[in-house]
Image (cartoon, rainbow, N blue to C red; front, side, top):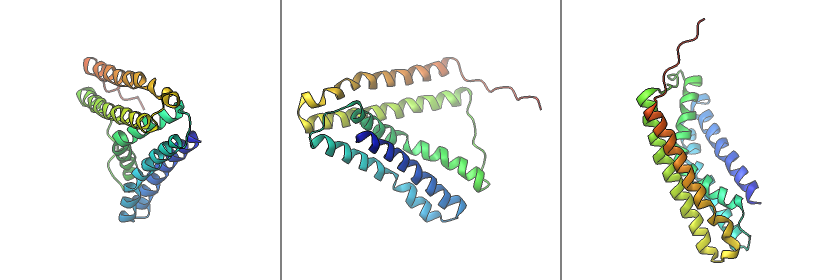
Length: 180
Protein backbone atom coordinates (compact mmCIF):
# COMPACT_ATOMS: atom_id res chain seq x y z
CA UNK A 1 0.00 0.00 0.00
CA UNK A 2 2.71 2.48 0.97
CA UNK A 3 4.47 2.00 -2.39
CA UNK A 4 1.28 3.01 -4.22
CA UNK A 5 1.01 6.11 -2.02
CA UNK A 6 4.65 7.04 -2.72
CA UNK A 7 4.08 6.69 -6.47
CA UNK A 8 0.82 8.64 -6.24
CA UNK A 9 2.50 11.42 -4.28
CA UNK A 10 5.38 11.65 -6.76
CA UNK A 11 2.91 11.87 -9.63
CA UNK A 12 0.82 14.39 -7.68
CA UNK A 13 3.92 16.52 -6.98
CA UNK A 14 4.82 16.77 -10.66
CA UNK A 15 1.20 17.22 -11.78
CA UNK A 16 0.86 20.22 -9.44
CA UNK A 17 4.12 21.66 -10.75
CA UNK A 18 3.16 21.21 -14.41
CA UNK A 19 -0.35 22.58 -13.84
CA UNK A 20 1.10 25.53 -11.92
CA UNK A 21 3.54 26.30 -14.72
CA UNK A 22 0.87 25.89 -17.41
CA UNK A 23 -1.39 28.25 -15.48
CA UNK A 24 1.45 30.75 -15.05
CA UNK A 25 2.97 30.75 -18.54
CA UNK A 26 0.45 29.29 -20.99
CA UNK A 27 -2.85 30.50 -19.54
CA UNK A 28 -1.32 33.68 -17.99
CA UNK A 29 -3.07 32.98 -14.67
CA UNK A 30 -0.19 33.99 -12.41
CA UNK A 31 -2.05 33.73 -9.08
CA UNK A 32 -3.46 30.32 -9.96
CA UNK A 33 0.03 29.19 -10.91
CA UNK A 34 1.47 30.43 -7.63
CA UNK A 35 -1.27 28.69 -5.64
CA UNK A 36 -0.74 25.38 -7.46
CA UNK A 37 3.02 25.58 -6.91
CA UNK A 38 2.57 26.63 -3.29
CA UNK A 39 0.41 23.61 -2.41
CA UNK A 40 3.01 21.05 -3.54
CA UNK A 41 4.09 20.57 0.13
CA UNK A 42 0.58 19.23 0.82
CA UNK A 43 1.62 16.14 -1.13
CA UNK A 44 4.46 15.64 1.35
CA UNK A 45 2.08 15.97 4.28
CA UNK A 46 -0.21 13.35 2.74
CA UNK A 47 2.70 10.94 2.38
CA UNK A 48 3.92 11.58 5.92
CA UNK A 49 0.43 11.09 7.34
CA UNK A 50 -0.12 7.91 5.33
CA UNK A 51 3.20 6.47 6.46
CA UNK A 52 2.59 7.22 10.13
CA UNK A 53 -1.02 5.99 9.99
CA UNK A 54 0.07 2.77 8.26
CA UNK A 55 2.70 2.09 10.92
CA UNK A 56 0.43 3.06 13.82
CA UNK A 57 -2.24 0.70 12.43
CA UNK A 58 0.12 -2.22 12.95
CA UNK A 59 2.00 -2.48 9.66
CA UNK A 60 5.42 -4.09 9.66
CA UNK A 61 8.00 -1.57 8.44
CA UNK A 62 9.37 -2.28 4.99
CA UNK A 63 11.94 -0.70 2.75
CA UNK A 64 9.08 1.33 1.27
CA UNK A 65 8.39 3.05 4.59
CA UNK A 66 12.05 4.04 4.59
CA UNK A 67 11.81 5.22 0.99
CA UNK A 68 8.85 7.38 2.02
CA UNK A 69 11.07 9.04 4.63
CA UNK A 70 13.84 9.59 2.06
CA UNK A 71 11.32 10.92 -0.47
CA UNK A 72 10.05 13.42 2.09
CA UNK A 73 13.57 14.58 2.92
CA UNK A 74 14.50 15.01 -0.73
CA UNK A 75 11.22 16.76 -1.49
CA UNK A 76 11.73 19.30 1.30
CA UNK A 77 15.44 19.87 0.59
CA UNK A 78 15.29 19.84 -3.22
CA UNK A 79 11.67 20.85 -3.89
CA UNK A 80 12.43 24.51 -4.50
CA UNK A 81 15.36 23.65 -6.78
CA UNK A 82 13.21 21.21 -8.79
CA UNK A 83 10.45 23.78 -9.17
CA UNK A 84 12.98 26.46 -10.20
CA UNK A 85 14.50 24.07 -12.74
CA UNK A 86 11.09 23.46 -14.33
CA UNK A 87 10.11 27.14 -14.05
CA UNK A 88 13.16 28.33 -16.02
CA UNK A 89 12.44 25.88 -18.82
CA UNK A 90 8.72 26.75 -18.97
CA UNK A 91 9.49 30.49 -18.96
CA UNK A 92 11.95 30.00 -21.83
CA UNK A 93 9.57 27.86 -23.89
CA UNK A 94 6.29 29.68 -23.26
CA UNK A 95 7.09 33.22 -22.10
CA UNK A 96 10.22 34.24 -24.03
CA UNK A 97 12.31 33.88 -20.88
CA UNK A 98 16.05 33.42 -21.03
CA UNK A 99 17.45 30.02 -21.95
CA UNK A 100 18.67 27.87 -19.08
CA UNK A 101 22.37 28.43 -18.44
CA UNK A 102 24.70 25.47 -18.05
CA UNK A 103 27.36 25.93 -15.41
CA UNK A 104 31.01 24.98 -15.74
CA UNK A 105 34.19 25.27 -13.73
CA UNK A 106 33.92 26.97 -10.34
CA UNK A 107 30.25 27.81 -10.86
CA UNK A 108 29.42 24.12 -11.37
CA UNK A 109 31.57 23.10 -8.39
CA UNK A 110 29.76 25.73 -6.30
CA UNK A 111 26.42 24.19 -7.27
CA UNK A 112 27.78 20.78 -6.29
CA UNK A 113 28.63 22.10 -2.81
CA UNK A 114 25.15 23.62 -2.50
CA UNK A 115 23.82 20.16 -3.34
CA UNK A 116 25.96 18.73 -0.53
CA UNK A 117 24.11 21.05 1.85
CA UNK A 118 20.73 20.12 0.32
CA UNK A 119 21.50 16.41 0.45
CA UNK A 120 22.65 16.70 4.06
CA UNK A 121 19.38 18.46 4.89
CA UNK A 122 17.42 15.74 3.05
CA UNK A 123 19.26 13.03 4.99
CA UNK A 124 18.73 14.78 8.33
CA UNK A 125 15.00 15.10 7.58
CA UNK A 126 14.78 11.45 6.45
CA UNK A 127 16.66 10.28 9.56
CA UNK A 128 14.36 12.37 11.72
CA UNK A 129 11.28 10.84 10.12
CA UNK A 130 12.72 7.34 10.55
CA UNK A 131 13.40 8.11 14.21
CA UNK A 132 9.90 9.57 14.64
CA UNK A 133 8.22 6.49 13.17
CA UNK A 134 10.40 4.16 15.23
CA UNK A 135 9.64 6.13 18.41
CA UNK A 136 5.90 6.33 17.77
CA UNK A 137 5.56 2.63 16.98
CA UNK A 138 7.89 1.70 19.87
CA UNK A 139 8.19 -1.91 18.73
CA UNK A 140 11.63 -2.89 17.47
CA UNK A 141 10.28 -6.08 15.92
CA UNK A 142 8.04 -3.98 13.62
CA UNK A 143 10.55 -1.21 12.81
CA UNK A 144 13.84 -3.10 12.44
CA UNK A 145 13.78 -2.66 8.65
CA UNK A 146 14.12 1.09 9.16
CA UNK A 147 17.28 1.00 11.28
CA UNK A 148 19.36 -0.34 8.39
CA UNK A 149 18.65 2.78 6.38
CA UNK A 150 20.79 5.08 8.52
CA UNK A 151 23.96 3.64 6.97
CA UNK A 152 22.52 4.15 3.49
CA UNK A 153 21.76 7.77 4.36
CA UNK A 154 25.40 8.19 5.38
CA UNK A 155 26.54 6.70 2.06
CA UNK A 156 24.31 9.14 0.18
CA UNK A 157 25.98 12.11 1.89
CA UNK A 158 29.43 10.58 1.32
CA UNK A 159 28.71 10.13 -2.39
CA UNK A 160 27.51 13.72 -2.68
CA UNK A 161 30.68 14.93 -0.91
CA UNK A 162 32.89 12.92 -3.27
CA UNK A 163 30.99 14.29 -6.27
CA UNK A 164 31.50 17.89 -5.12
CA UNK A 165 35.14 17.27 -4.22
CA UNK A 166 35.74 15.70 -7.62
CA UNK A 167 34.34 18.70 -9.48
CA UNK A 168 36.25 21.06 -7.20
CA UNK A 169 39.56 19.33 -7.96
CA UNK A 170 38.75 18.61 -11.61
CA UNK A 171 36.32 21.31 -12.74
CA UNK A 172 33.78 20.55 -15.43
CA UNK A 173 35.08 22.13 -18.61
CA UNK A 174 32.84 23.72 -21.17
CA UNK A 175 32.55 21.44 -24.17
CA UNK A 176 33.75 22.72 -27.51
CA UNK A 177 30.98 23.83 -29.86
CA UNK A 178 30.03 21.22 -32.41
CA UNK A 179 30.75 22.12 -36.02
CA UNK A 180 27.70 22.96 -38.07
